[in-house]
Length: 269
Image (cartoon, rainbow, N blue to C red):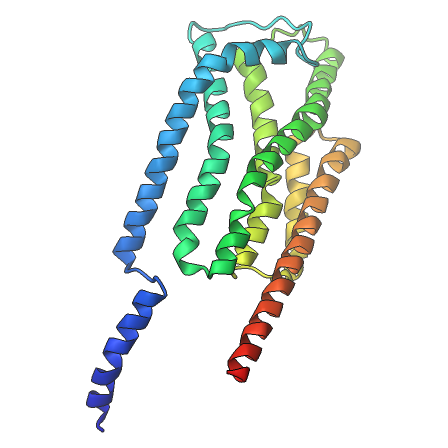
């Protein structure tokens, strides 16, 4: 049989195989991605509406906690109060959207996963919100007070009279707690990427030095310029990376075991 005839006979089989594996053309992938993004944006908008409703009690709660309690915050423009409500609304919307966004990401990559991989990665979604809230708690109760008291100490040493604006206070707080809270998603992200075979522990170990540098850099940036504060933030972030590598190794080991079992079954057949 000639080459052209062999290619012609193989072409229908290749097309059928592509359909069976659930692979879609690029345009269909982009359309599916656009649909998932629209779903997430709708949830964010709904979350912002909910955020506007609960912004006032959340603000009252935070103002009754250290280091805010006893502070007298000021508005330097007519828009400061509205801006504060919008900030709270957006943060609350992001918190509500995190598990839904994780589900949409899973749904987008689901056609390319095996059945066991689909079940395994689906289990990560409930933990996305938990890890984010854990990161918020750590950054708010540990990192933020360190940074706040450091800035007040510097102002006192310079004999400056503090007039703290509401926008400046909460912008300062959110700029610290949000990046750290998102970093607490790192173990789940790495486990997910390992489960879909994008990453593996071998590659993560090779990137360890770079990862440590990034974690220390983040710790230096978000904390006051003193050694103790930097260590208090950098060490938990480094531990997060090591936990991520350990979890990735667990997922990878299970993958190798399943692959070996599949190969053994194929040989037996």
